Image (cartoon, rainbow, N blue to C red; front, side):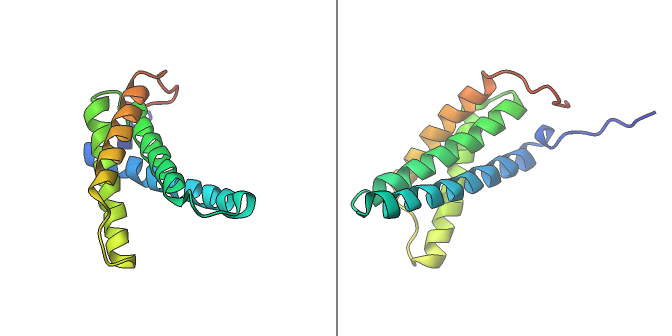
Length: 132
């Protein structure tokens, strides 16, 4: 007889960490893609802040969407938490690389987009192979 193995999504801190990691990976991929478009296609660096913000928003939305989709409850809180944790990671990276933490506007941007992603994830279709 097979033993029932618990999913990582049943553990709240572990699921938030996995969602933030996926969000940071998405942010990195979006940064690479958008910076390539900005440099090679547009050739002008005037829109770098807008493209950087778009990459952050897409990463926070994606990570919170995954958290909400697999956690299946507390989408608004879980998404906001994922956005705030992503802000902490971005702020620590900025502190190490640039010597200054991220701006407080990024916290608002990440929590709002994370909350939207969490709500959308909870209200999406249930995954087929989700173990509770």
